[in-house]
Image (cartoon, rainbow, N blue to C red; front, side, top):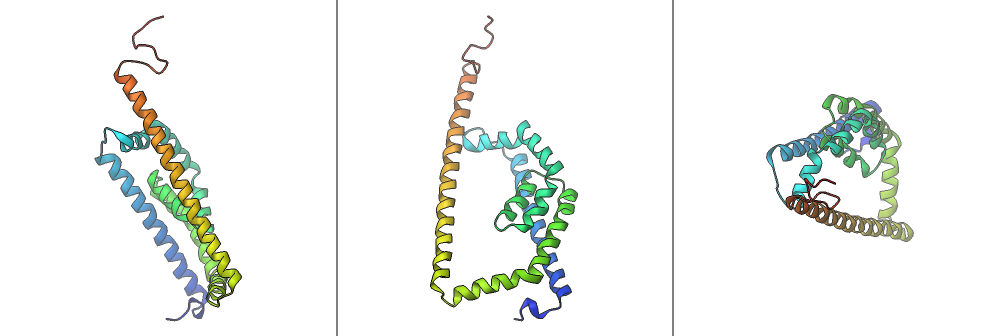
Length: 195
């Protein structure tokens, strides 16, 4: 298979721009579809799923969605200059149901920048890193292994922290619902009591 650098710059650039646009649209579309279908067709009545469903359908997320719909275009464009964060932003735009036309418009400058970088110096840098790793330079191999271990440990730590926070928020929601069921307000007084 011929390398991308054997093609004229314009062909490589257009190909990469198309890849960036298609990938972004697919990520956005899948996230948006899943969110809309979940909110439309599910009504969990207990547990963490009910808490997340109420949160996604709630007023606070609506305000956040409005802010991202208004200002999130910058984040969508800038995410193409990151590694790893790009998919999160693209999926986040779909999950908050950013309007498609606004998302697509925001995507263009980011995809243009990404295609420019990869059509010029991007692949050369990646090939140099891969070549150095394949050549077996011990310090580079050690550095790559350390980065991978740090990434795995960091991800595990974040997942544990997130799980703890979700469990804790579920307990709080459950307690509030139980108090409401008993007719007790948030301050501990009975509903309907007058002072």
